[in-house]
Image 1 (cartoon, rainbow, N blue to C red):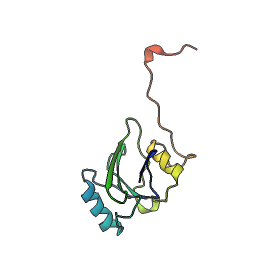
Image 2: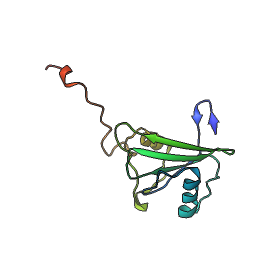
Image 3: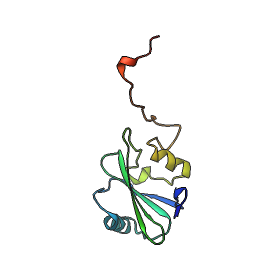
Image 4: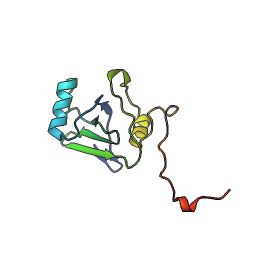
Length: 126
């Protein structure tokens, strides 16, 4: 659903492992149907896919009358993506927000994204 605050969704499904991000809406929809047996026409369900490179993901969302294809690429950092079924988990809204910001899903574990380095000429003297 598209609201004044942006896209909203009621459920998040992570495609565990590596997916071919060259695929478009039809290819990703077929992937979900064949691999997981889930209908992508389930309203307000966001399906997320990650390729080999962990700095970009694609999302597929059915809003009830149209598909929305999302492509997110971090300029710095990596997504903490589950690579096998043992690492898969349901995400809360907070965990999803952390994932989208490039942080570890669990706030108490894992490194934070590193801020870009400043110009070495402008080092602060101690």
